Length: 157
Image (cartoon, rainbow, N blue to C red; front, side, top):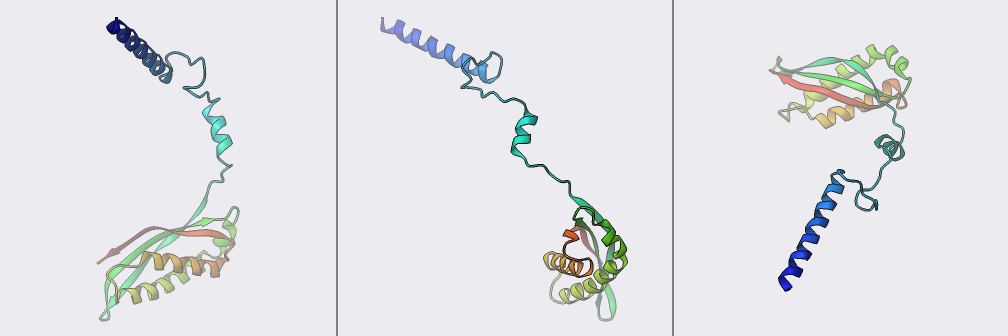
């Protein structure tokens, strides 16, 4: 008799586990709504969770090549390409000062990287980024851009 009860209980547990599995795979509906929560739609859920986003606005700045001098000769070159993450509708301010901005970048980076390369083997990317942000804020104003992004930086011997 005990064997029959164990077999019946095992069959009920197996049937219940199969039903729960089918409900999780959404093959059969969940009448209680406890196992599989009902979600209206993915778009409605995302709209409720995420705030409205503004696409970032970027402006590419012409890349610069910085010569590295050693013993009066060009030892290597550092190529840097960057872009500005702009505030909305501020392209006009940077367009009018792009030549000045590039000139300041070239002069300052030549000094900065030249001094660094006497002590280091590779350019300090963090120092370069901080320098670019500081100079850009002085030339175009701090309320015109959000960040200066270094897109490429490599050395050529």
